[in-house]
Length: 308
Image (cartoon, rainbow, N blue to C red; front, top):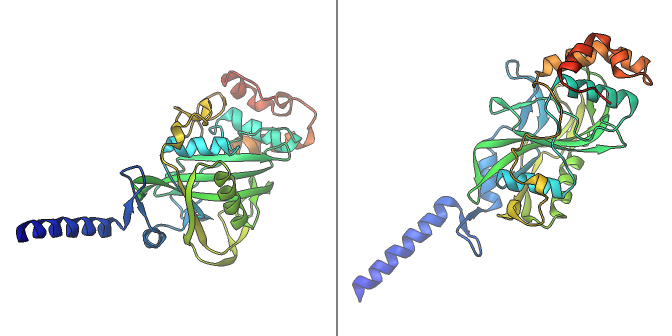
């Protein structure tokens, strides 16, 4: 009897130690584990709180203000359900297309987003929502899969959510760019609201991130204010395989998007393309892009398509 009690006691101690070690408990109906908000906050304290505009020169970018725990398929599916789409890759065609969209007020809901850096690499994916019928204003968020953090055994996608409120000359260089709204917390909260509305979110909570800032600036010199919190959104496991997820949200890689033809080019090349024809576009909004930028006609033809 005593031997049996000792064995049962050892099992209980080991089970308790396991739970304490991982700071979590078993989910209902599954074997996955989930961390408490306090555990997640402790893990976030060790992570970078901002991305960088460039890799070699550490120009600060936007704050990390949202994190989603789920598989890649689940992340992709819930954003599709919420009405967000992935951007096109950066090519000559997509660069010209976004310039035309901004200048002429034409719709381009999958316009490319520039690269920012975290954990030594560009974003693993992004999502956006066009506003007012052109790429000049849009909601968007970039995501990096954390190299170290998991919640409930699921990968965590660290995100920077900002609103592109206008476009114009960069505050840190003579090139065209988007200017973000300084209310970055509103964009963070919009994403949480949109994702919760899909009924594919298990829970959401906030943890400390960059900390309160007023009048801070990103890599383009745009000011922003924030309370410094990160909104953590834990998805219902298996939501990416749900019948409610559209076919477009299943199977493809996170970075796959629209049909921008041609090879992927660098941010610097995109800037040269846009700067090289930007003035002409603004002067000839009613002309075809090939007439406005004849020097890029060959490049567009090589991309097997023309910009509408």
